[in-house]
Image (cartoon, rainbow, N blue to C red; front, side, top):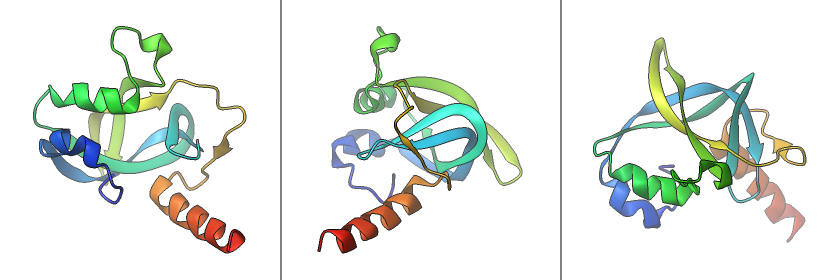
Length: 129
């Protein structure tokens, strides 16, 4: 998140405190424009963990993630509580789990979307030169 241009989240970003890089267990998919985490599977999904200083920031992040608290079944993502691992520590965290069909999506084997995008985009540059 820190390496991506998310200026539309700037209001919320001022109230987030970076905790560290951690992982949850599940499966990570490539939806081309965004990653899709699903909390089934035993692979590591690597990501950044932030402490939210004000609960009101969740409204901004929910809107960005396509999560509607009033109609979660119709949301692109569902906000779930799960356990994240940072080193030897465990934290209860919120994660946005993809609420769509994953059958035709490519699995990101590394579980690291940032690294995956860097490689994927370099390959596309070479192909489309």
